[in-house]
Picture (cartoon, one colour):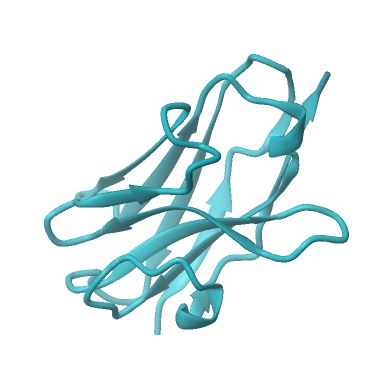
Length: 124
C-alpha cells in the first residue's frame, strides 16, 4: 500500500508560481511511476506530468510543457510539481497518483493510489 498526501495548493495571480508537494509513505517507491493529474469543475481528470521514481525520466502534457516541472526527492519520498507562468485555465484540483508501472502512462485509470487532492486557483 502507498499513501499519498498533497500540499501546496492555493490562490495565485495569473503569471505567478506555486509548488505542489506529494509525500509518499507505506513502501519504497522503487519501480513506481508517479503522476500529477488535475480536474477542473465539470471536466474529466487529465494528466499533467509524470516521473519514473527509478531513473527520474519525466513526461508532460502539452498544455504545461515549458511551464511546469516535476521532480522527486528520494530522501524525502516526495514528488514536487513546480508550476510557473500560471494561467486561469490551470485552475483545478490537483491530484498525485502512483502505481507500479514500467512507463509513464497518461490514463488516470492505470493508477491505483491517489492522494486527496489540493486546490489550485489562478485569478485573472
